[in-house]
Each structure stands twice: as C-alpha cells, then as structure tokens.
Image (tube, rainbow, N blue to C red):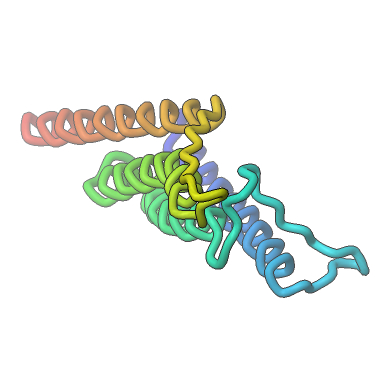
Amino acid sequence: MDDEIIKRYARRLRLGVLIVFGAVLALVICGQFGIRIAGAPVILQPRSAGVEGIPTVGDGVLVLLAIAIYWLSAALRAIAGGDLFSRAVVRSFRQFAVWMLVMALFTAVAPMILATAAPMHGGRHRIMVLIDLRELLLVGLTLLLLLIARMFERARAIQDEMSEIV
C-alpha cells in the first residue's frame, strides 16, 4: 500500500472515530440530562441489573474509552503526518491498547464489585458473578491489540536497524 494511501486512510479513520465518539458522547449527555432529540427521549439502560447508581459503570467505561480514543487519535494523527513506525505512533498505539484493556477489565469486573457493595437483602450479602461472553471477547481482542503494539515496536526497531545500515 502506498504511503499516501495510508496517510489518507489514517486521516479519514481518525475523523470517523472522533465523529462517532462525539455522537456517542452527545447521546449519553442527552440521556443523563433528559434532553430530547427530535422530540424523542434518550434512555440510558445498563446491561447489568441492580448496579445502577451515580456514577454508573457506563460512566466509568465512557471515561476509560475517552482516554483510549485520545491515544488512538494521537497514533492516527502521527500516521497521517507520515510517521508509520515512529516512536510516537508505537507509543500511542500501545497506550491505546493498554487503556482498551483497562476498559475491558473494568467492564467485566465493576458490576460485580458494585453488586457486592450494594445494600444487603434480608441480612445477607449476595455476590453475583456474571460472565458475559462479549466482555471476554473484548478482553481477548484488547490482548491482541497489545500483541500488535509489540509487533509495531519490533518493526520500528527493524526500521531503525535498516536506516543505520544505509
């Protein structure tokens, strides 16, 4: 693939990611504050029952996702600028993968922790261990992203070696 095509793709992907995340953020804000869109209410509903509160698990996930999107955006900006395997790209992509892993683990564990901390029913604590295959898949995919980040680091090292030889 030509470098110009990669740069253009990175610019478009960065713009698309930022637009989609902005739309999601706008919908969450509308849902939190009861703002209607075209007269229709925006309703936020957690997947896990009995773990609602202020703030919710979804709010934590959104914050962690925002951090991950920041690092992805930085990596895509550097790639669009022509740095394919630079330190900035590799570092940003690795940070993106790490924050996605943190988000995936938080998504899987936080509902169980909140359920444990909930008020007792009938004098007994109830500990619910919920395993969602989507969350396990997300953890697996983020581990794959970390592997890809390591491969980028290796590619950068090879590129540095090649530039020293010439």
